[in-house]
Length: 442
Image 1 (cartoon, rainbow, N blue to C red):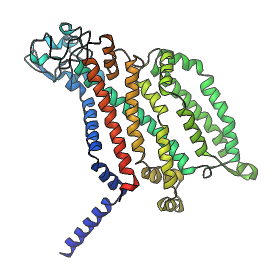
Image 2: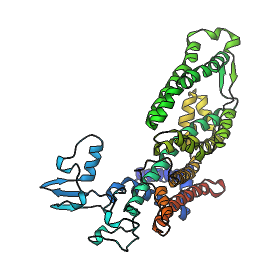
Image 3: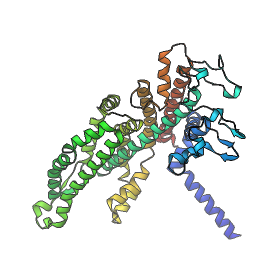
Image 4: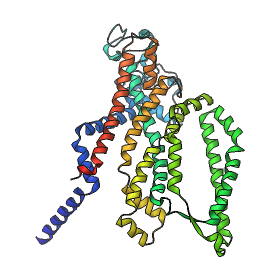
């Protein structure tokens, strides 16, 4: 009996501790904001919609039985694209919608976003003047000039929008969290380096930059003119070469006994906080859209990945400022001082103890950043810049409405999708802002 009561007491104590933790308080405050909570659920729905877009809108069947054989064409297409399998000869150029099946099950929207319907081209409005064999083949949101289904384009455009937001902010988060945490933890006086190491690094920086990027600038230009992927490979090689060359001064310090010379071994402060702060100011001064337009004009084959990378490389400043401010507070707390007194390495203290306790406010900047990335990509697609012609995006669908003003559905539905997506991310950001506000924790 006593053991049972002791166990219940421990459970109550555990629940009490969890309920009063900072994360539990933020979560409880966030749930009180119904608008932010429903916005988060809409985001989950949009992500799920993007993941299963091929199974919701496609001209291939979900399941079919043809000539006595059973096929799952959409799943089969994934394996073919990965090189795992091949299509049978009779299905290589199959017209899936006009074949005679023993049994078949099509997706809810039986049109691919790039598939044209010759019987319903020239801007068919929703529910009106459509030539379809049955209600099953109706274009529920209408078609564009060449007969592409708008609903299918919206569903597949969700995948592009979510991908741009997630990938670009993942890049921005990695850069912002690393630089911001270094600036916040070390400040201007806590990072020290020996004079000889600092001198050798300063001498090798222009040397490494010259041989890594200046000497290889023609190769990188040729790669950029060829394709974005070739440029990325060339840039990664130059970056690897730069890191390799910058390892030389540290190797020299390690191999030669400079520690015996007091003048060279004396350590000096490196103002990391000032360096990162000035870098943030420089990045903020660069207009992102203008930068993307310039690079797209240079590159022969711009892609959606290019937009993701540029947005990520220019969108980390807000994240860095948030985590820098938190690290300035966290670095003076008792558990950080305890870790330092135990002799833990600085990298372990930063990445295992300091950063995990400073990430909550960063979520605010990430939420707003995703909304900004989606809006930037939609703006570029609307202008017809940065994406391949065969990629369907919300901005590209919205752009098609300019060619024919009476086609109101081409402006209303994509515009509404962009508006809803950007709005829900902003609501989530505002909800996190209110939940993290110290005045609401009581």
